[in-house]
Image (cartoon, rainbow, N blue to C red; front, side, top):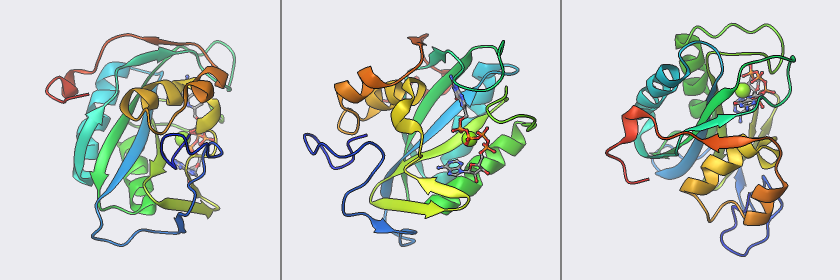
Length: 188
Ligand code: A4P
Ligand code: MG
């Protein structure tokens, strides 16, 4: 991640000058949510999640759809579909986490083993100007800088936030497989 802007050379995942904690309630901020699915009708589950995120503000962009190799977790899992969604939202990070967890619940996600197969994983990746370091919420997402399944779709939407070197150094195989049906009218 390079949230300081082009050429800032920031440490991946940090936001120089960010105010810790929540945002004020009426400031519209750019935010990115990562969505993944490797169980059930992956495409339909991601499309439903993107639709659900419209309650958080304007969905300003949805990345191309990627099929990605599972990172971590038990052997033999099916491949994931992953996308990143860009929002213009007044929600603070914790409200976005609540929305993500509600979407996972709506997808009837069952937790068995960490990084095990799931109908939906919804993570708060980055919120403009915000850093949170609490027991149940870390923003920017602490593992995003290592993961190509996050950085590739994020770089499609926000080349100002991901340097080519960060993308090249990230791990895991990802393949672009088109787009979700919900975003054909959007610009990116
Ligand atoms: N949590 C803390 N910070 C955040 C945040 N920024 N966004 C807490 C979302 N959640 C956050 O998550 C565990 C706890 O993380 C939550 O209670 C929340 O309060 P979880 O969703 O219950 O469990 P998890 O997702 O299995 O754990 P974890 O460690 O969050 O996993 P990740 O990092 O979300 O990775 N491979 C591919 N190819 N594609 C994927 O999408 N996803 C994962 C999950 C692993 N491998 C993958 C993919
Ligand atoms: Mg998660």
